[in-house]
Amino acid sequence: MSDSYDAIVLGAGAAGLMCAARAGQRGRRVLVLEKSDRPGKKILISGGGRCNFTNIGARPANYLSANPHFAKSALARYTPRDFLDLVESYGIAWHEKTLGQLFCDGSARQIVDMLLEECAKGDVTLRCGEEIGSVEHGNGFTVTTQSGRFSARALVIATGGPSIPKMGATGFAYDLARQFGLKLVEPRPALVPLTLGGEEVLFREISGVAAPVVAIAGKTGFAEAALFTHRGLSGPAILQASSYWRPGEPLLIDFVPDRSAEWLLEAKRDTPRTGARTLLREALPARLADILAEKLGLDGDMGNLPDKALRAAGERLKRWTFRPNGTEGFAKAEVTLGGISTAGLSSKTMESKRIPGLFAIGEAVDVTGWLGGYNFQWAWASGVAAGEAI
Image (cartoon, rainbow, N blue to C red; front, side):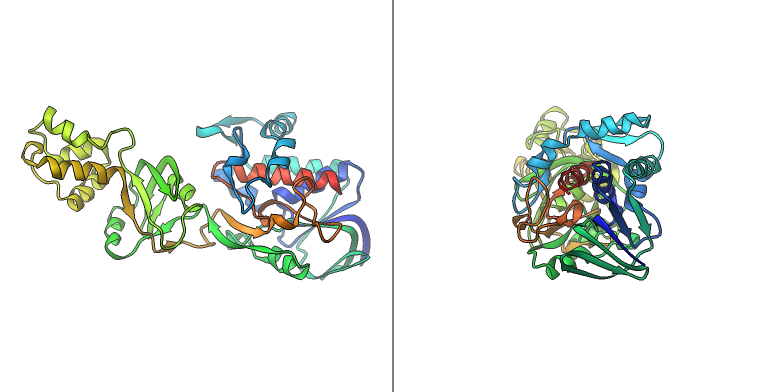
């Protein structure tokens, strides 16, 4: 089989479908090739099956990239409100959770169905179960699969990154980037649990315990829940901080974000007969309080503990230092940091500066959002930017 198109989009995920729909509705003849047996697999599992499809407060500051300015153009031209208008035009009920996160009331399937209907409006051809054998560049692009050869004047790399390999994710986008001479920013797992070793293994004993904290990596902190696991640390605050953490660096945790470093001294003055562990249990989950009291050497009534020890304990609870020995890797990472370097792409169109007609969008590109709908917004915005330019 051989056929010719205006554009071939590799990948039927969030960015690929959005790009194809926009280009198709502009009158372009578009083919989407997807290696999985169905489109939008990552969309379907996102947000616990309800798809955290955007964040109403998404702005460039919520994204990590070697070039922090790159995402500004696309995000400004296709906003969370624009995507929400599309969602509402399909009658999809939604709700806002904490921190601006928007979810479907029903199922993530509604978002996939909406994107497929948008593609249908543009007469987009979608072919699933297609394994890419080769991609050639000459007078346009030619993609070979087990079904035949397909050619187009434009090619869009929308195959994502290697996070969540059980969903079929691979580093194929990077292979293509190397083939075409595009530079890469080293891909790393992001929004990923951190692992603990050494003496910190003790915290594994409280696996399943969660507490509101501020997690700080480098100069960036996130006030959300942390969860202790059988391997280390997880929960929203940790996943957020993981994107800023580097191997060998410490991770700081404020276990009592709503209290000052002097709170133990104040408690000693106010309630000297209260047991130190009892006091910690009032501020933290009991099992966590007990393990921290043990580590801090806090035992007995507050009135019998030296001020110096309480001051030191209060300061340590505000800046508890963990030294993660790694992450749980791409298998547990929600997204990928790094990817195709933005230095070789137009921030307005996502097109390669060196190879006309070659585009890269979504997670394949070195733009990574925070947890909470930001990465979907980048997928929509970068998809629209490329779709408008094809």
